[in-house]
Image (cartoon, rainbow, N blue to C red; front, side, top):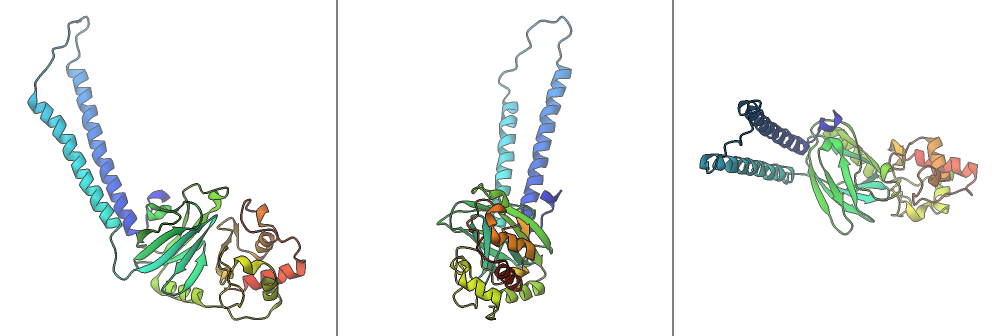
Length: 305
């Protein structure tokens, strides 16, 4: 089952605790059912016997057993839970800091050490501890990647944190797990776990700014209201912060936080009328952009790798 195909050391600790608690619960259930069945068989009254059952009172040994056993079990589980919580939340040496910011309805990922910013697709290095800070700019969101093993809320005005160490490479899907508005179901996230050398190459590429080209598509971007919401680092005037950073849009696999694949045709449809694809999204429609300008703009944005 994917839900138990965990890929973080913290998630594996949580899963180990879960299976241990399930085993303890199963043993207790088996013991209770066994005693009940034994009592039903051994002390069953013969047919026709309507005498009252003999009452047993003042069995101190029995009272101590049924009081001490649950207390000791709960104490053991409590200590195991505390130990697992300390393991999951334990600070790790030489972590890679990542800032996760939740928006309606998309994710922003910032890598402070490399001065890189991306959206909706989070790359992480395998085997390297991540110190993930989580913030929200609008409502409560919840960062939940099933195969990480647990989730954390993003609360406006508060910074929460997660320590994550991914133990194997792969691509893992996640989502917002806290209802946050109309497009909550399409606030998807993709996690790409790379070997350290591949991650370093990716994050260095993401940190690079673009070189102004004075191309037709670049001029369309600058002359329209795109720059009021979006940034393209290295392009003068493109410093918006309302929408996703588009510096390396062409390298992303999806648009609109997973709602459609990132293809030229889909990007044209998204720019023309994002509301028809993701109702409620904050991006306005641009029906007045001419077909030639739209094609030039899409070609420019898709070239931003």
